[in-house]
Structure formats: structure tokens, C-alpha cells
Image 1 (cartoon, rainbow, N blue to C red):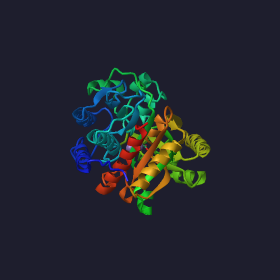
Image 2 (image 1 turned 60 degrees about the vertical axis):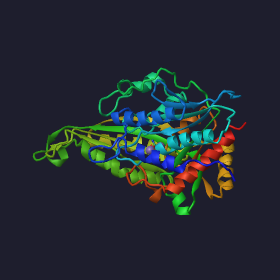
Image 3 (image 1 turned 180 degrees about the vertical axis):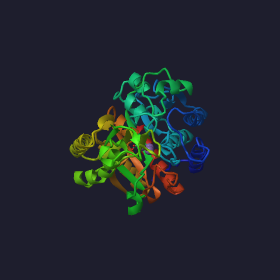
Amino acid sequence: MSTLQVDGERLLGRLKALGEVGRDAEGRLVRLAATDADKAGRDLTAAWLAEAGLEVMVDRIGNLFGLWRPSGCAEQAALMLGSHIDTVRDGGIYDGAYGVLAGLEVIQSLMAAGFAPARPIMLVAFTNEEGARYAPDMMGSLVYAGGLAVDEALAARGEDGTVLGAELARIGYAGALEPGFVRPHAYVELHIEQGPVLEREGLPIGVVESLQGISWRRVTFTGRANHAGTTPMAMRRDAGHAAAVAIAHLRELAAASGPATVATAGTLRLEPNVINVVPRLASFTVDLRDPDDARLAAAEAALEAFLADLAEREGLSLTVEVLARFEPVVFDEAICQRIERAAEARGLAFRRMTSGAGHDAQMIARISPAAMIFVPSQGGISHNPREHTEPEQLVAGANVFLDVVAGLVSE
Ligand code: HGY
Ligand code: MN
Ligand code: MN
Ligand code: MN
């Protein structure tokens, strides 16, 4: 049994404090990437990193780093711990923030225990993991892993008409470091499950060995605005109607694809969006996911065919923009076994699992061995203010994280 322990009170206190940063007038947590709310969250996190004695750095895509490089480190390649502190609109306080703050807690607990790591430890809060303001999601880690050119990412335009690069400069987080400046020795991410499995099986720890494929599209139908009262139904070119038919079809498309396929239309915009005008334009997003890449590709093809046929039948024009496409990822078996041993040593039951949610680990797995640790989500709820994990579960996860990190920097 490990003698190392995190300071649970400090971790839970910081989670609560960061969870209060970025509340809107209705009290909703909205820390979208590169907004003033994100800046406030970054500033608080950076202050904690500095207080802990870490070297604080920012790269060109705004990834925020805290580096612990004790003198005499035999190795150069750092162990990387990470996640994100941006949130969705009206999100919970644990998604992302838990992994970043537990990473800081692990480093400070190792320092307090007089631990001498053989290699540096680099903590990172990646920019725009959620993709709620700029697509694609997991953007900061994707750029860091070389999957997206930094200048292309900085040019990303949000639905609000802003450009990421200008916003990062405005909030003071447009760093000079080239992303990817350190190739990690390994990467470990601690995260809430955001799903129902661990709670349903009464397990405190999830050993995340894989992550499903993700595909995001923006679909736009364009028809003709017309009077709601004078235009006979057969004469309409109603973009809103087509969007409704397409969104309603997603359930059938997912069912036809396979038991694990999920499909979501999370955003919808009508123009001119007036009660007595037939919509000229309808723009909505489709988020498709499946653990099997071939099945995901087949579902994407089925969606595109359905949309084209619908546009034809309705006399509408159609544009489909692919916003993100990430293949399923298999994480590092050796790190997964370390997580299992650490959970066992603390008497914590666990199971192997795949992640339904996207995470920064899926990007960093492109450049280094990576794996994740999950803790339960109450009711499987996330991306929702009711997101919750019990304090003792949060601390247990952080202690397993501590043991895995201690093991990875001991040789
Ligand atoms: O979409 C996702 O799964 C991630 O939270 N960005
Ligand atoms: Mn997350
Ligand atoms: Mn999320
Ligand atoms: Mn995520």
C-alpha cells in the first residue's frame, strides 16, 4: 500500500474555487475557450502553478504549462499530466478541471514527500478541449501533437464571429513557445467518466484503455424565405422543415449503424428566425461517434446520402462542412497495467473501459504512450450543472493518479 497521499482538502477546495470562475448572470458555468471567463480561470490556475514553484509557460495556441524540473533530473523527456479548464455552456465543475487540479495536487504531494523524480513532470491545461466556441474540439492538444497546424488553429472562427488567435492575444494567452516543444515520455489524464458505467457497477476506478471515434459536421440547408400565411405547402422551399426531418432521422441512422453508434444534433440556427417567415436557411451540427472506425465511416456516408437526397426532394441547396474527424484510439497497455496495480494496492476495485467522450489524451497518444483514469459520475451526468462525483471518489482517483505518476518518474 503506498504511503503517499494527496491533500484532499486542498484539491477539493481548488475544484470548488475554480468552479465558481466564469459564472454568467444566471449563475451558469460558461468558461468557453479564450473568453474573459476562460482568462479568469487561466489566471487562477496559473497563480496556483506559480505558488507551487512550477515554471509557468504558455505556447502559441495558448496551452498553459506548469513544469517541475528538479535539479539533477537524470532524464530530459518529461512525464506529461493534463486535461483542460474550458467548459461547455452551462457545464459542470469537474469535467477537465479535475484532471488539471489533481495533476497539480500530485506534483505538490510528491514535493511535500521529498520525492526526487528521475524526470521532469509537465502539467498542462490544453486550450479549447470542448470545441464549444471553435472547432475542432481537443484543439490545443491536437495542435501540440502535430495534428493541426498552429496557424490554421489560430485562424479558427467561432459562431460568434471571433477568431481564436485574436481572442487568445486579447486575454493575454498567446504564448511564444512552439506547440510540441517537449515530446512527452508518457501522458496520463485523470477525468470523470461522464457516463453511467462505473456508478452502475459500483466501481471507484476506471482503467481507460481506448476511446471512440468522433465526427463533427455542420450541415446547412438553403431554401427560400416566404410568407407563412400566403405560401401553399407544395410551393415552399422550407430549410427549417428539412433540418427537422434530418435531425429526426439521426435516431434511425444510429440504430441502423450499430449498438454503440451515437448521433447528436446539438446546435440549430434558423434564418431569418421569425415566427411568420418560412425559414430560408437552417444550419445545424451533427456529432457522430462509434468505437469502430469502419462503422463510423459507414454512418457518415449514410448521413451524407440522406442529406443529399432530402435536399434534392425539397429543392434546397446543401453544404456539409466536416468540423472534426478523430479515429478511435487504443491507449498504452503498460500504463493501463500500472493503473490497475495502483488501484489494487489501494484496495480499489476497477474495470477496463473505453471512453465515450473525447479527451486530450486521444491527441497526445499520437506522440507518446498515454492512458486515462476515470472516477464515477453520479447518474452518468456531465456537460450539465448537475455533474457530480463524491469527494471521497475524487480523492481516491487522485491517489491512484499519484501512485501511477510516482511509478512513471521513478525510473
Ligand atoms: O466532445 C467531447 O467529447 C469532449 O468533451 N470535447
Ligand atoms: Mn473533459
Ligand atoms: Mn467535456
Ligand atoms: Mn472531453
